Image (cartoon, rainbow, N blue to C red; front, side):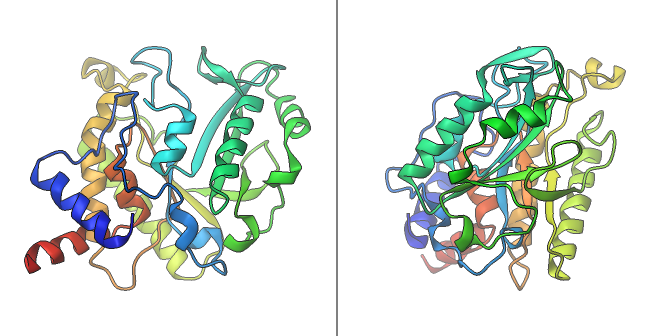
Length: 304
């Protein structure tokens, strides 16, 4: 989908009140003309830390009920919708993907194979993966994962690659006891994921995104990541308000969309690093990819 097609699509969606900013339906519906390989137009000379990347927090948490579920789409559908960063919680000798006590019915090797299939079809794309060892055999998981990594399609070096160096590859992101890949700086602080008040949560998200934006503007080469996800489960107030990951995303996602829309008025165009979301809708993902889209839509609406 070129810029004009995307603008026209957004106008039609906006006029019919059908912008998909929050999504909890497992069926992915994309515009017929949508170009899945959106990274094709990116400058090969840019560092991957110099672009804004849509991601999912607890990317494959599709099972476990309202307390555990953070996403609706399968891995392949998230890739097709534009997600390029995946947060994986990996456990045990079988390298199962988990969320808390809940098995997500997929393993790390299966995830890697799915991404390989996607990259074979869309070699212009880059997929970032963070492995977070959890639960059973937590200390052994990094070595077990390393033994399964397909080095031919993977970037495991700690140096920040340029886009042209890693097209068609999985770029691993290191944090804490997983030491392969590009170092990650998280803007969230301890406990920020706990939500008892949505407005206060959004204030923190704005602060975190502003911090990432300013750091990148000042020439930082770190890979910054901010979370828009959160849950009230685990706090008395949040539990009483039933602020599950889904309920939080339902309220936060439109606020995030509006923040990015306002950011499009800045010059030069701001970059935020990775934004890890729960239950993102297609149009929110597109806004993360290019926050100038909405202003282009407004300009075309004015011209019409």
